[in-house]
Every structure is written in C-alpha cells, then in structure tokens.
Length: 120
Image (cartoon, rainbow, N blue to C red; front, side, top):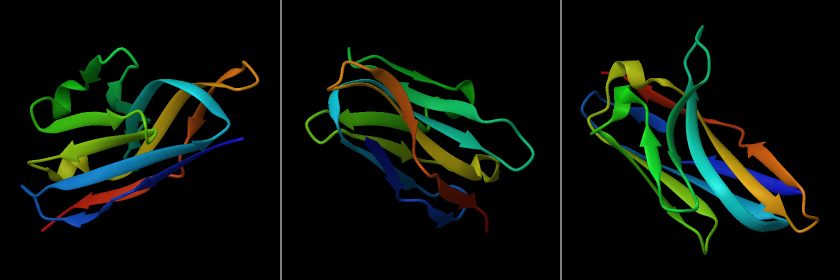
C-alpha cells in the first residue's frame, strides 16, 4: 500500500507565504510525477503545480511567479512554496503521487488534503 500525507496548511494574511509538504511512503519502487492540486468551495479540483521525474515542472497560469514546486526524491517528498498569497488561493490543497509499486503496478494516489486560507 501507498500513503500520501500533506502538511503545512493554515491561515495567512494576503501577501504572506506558506510552504506545503507532501510525503509518500509504502511499497513504492519509483515515483514519476508529483503534483499539487487545489479545490475551492463550489469549484472543480485544478492543477496548481507538478514536478516530473525528469526534473520538469509546470504551473497553473494563476500561480506562475508566486509558487514554486520542488522535490526530494530520496525522501519521496514534494514541496510547494507559496508566496504573495491572495484570497483567491484559498482552497483545500491536495497532493498527488504517480508511482510504480514493487509489484510492477502503476497507480496514482491522493493525500487527504490540507486547508489553506488567505484572509485578513
């Protein structure tokens, strides 16, 4: 089995910063893409940022220049540094891990989500 656990959410004022962490564990042979998604009330879940095993990254237009994704492959961990936060960044942030398990099965796993609230 594979577990994905996020941390680092919270309440922050507009213009502030937060750093989210996501750690994967379990029967993982290798990790392909690690990504952050978010879902605001009444809206669909959307991709925020993703990091591929080859070192590539991509970002939603709404967060380019403000958010940065990074990963530590040895720790099976991905981070999301969020700067210049805006009220519209308020959402539950979810981590997604696309991996190959030791049984040669490829699968995608979600964390439980962490709330980010940007408000004065």
